[in-house]
Length: 273
Image 1 (cartoon, rainbow, N blue to C red):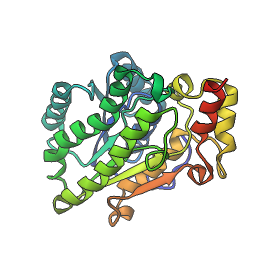
Image 2: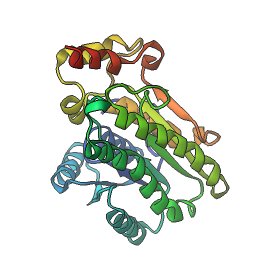
Image 3: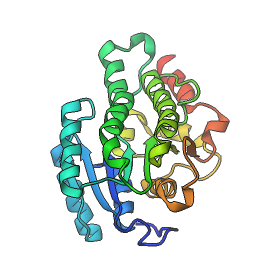
Image 4: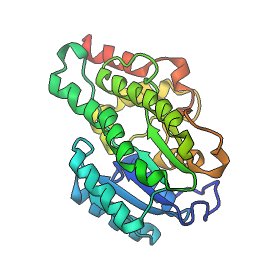
């Protein structure tokens, strides 16, 4: 793991819950919190991925990753996991809503099921998990929620319209909860990460090397990034240094959003041919 700019015990004693935490950025977030003293619980749909994540984390860092299967589309499983956290920990300090789904498809040929699948995971799932965790978070001495969005959440999302609409909803929900839960001393922010080539991104979005090159050409600073760098942004948003920040979003995409929409250029090449 790359050297962190934060002290090792920054989150000593803090209890962290990360959705979609078995792979990709979610696992990177989990390992970063563990390495800074936190207790970390991750959940996702696939038991084998969770088992593998816990094993790799133990081998690499010598730290325990607690996990349980959960589908953010199923409120019953969400409630079961939150009840488990309550029984195990009695409380919760930090929630990272990272579970997501996305794939390239023009709206004109997108099925109802395709639309619903992404919106149900990204937007509805963020709602379900946040609401279920609220009773635990409000008992903490200053809790924090970070919702993972994308740099098309506040603009057009050509060829990923389902994800764009869902992420836009998450951004609005972020700001709504920041106000509604302010009296409970719960801060709610969003992180817009840069391009991270996780396995899911490679499989569903970066369809070939030329696609990845198109995206990289639209990144002014830093190029394609990694989960460890994005984890540092999440640590910051949850740290005492950010205790006056709520209802905001941290854009960590190397300035890509200022240049243009790489999905538009990529989609035109694919679907106009």
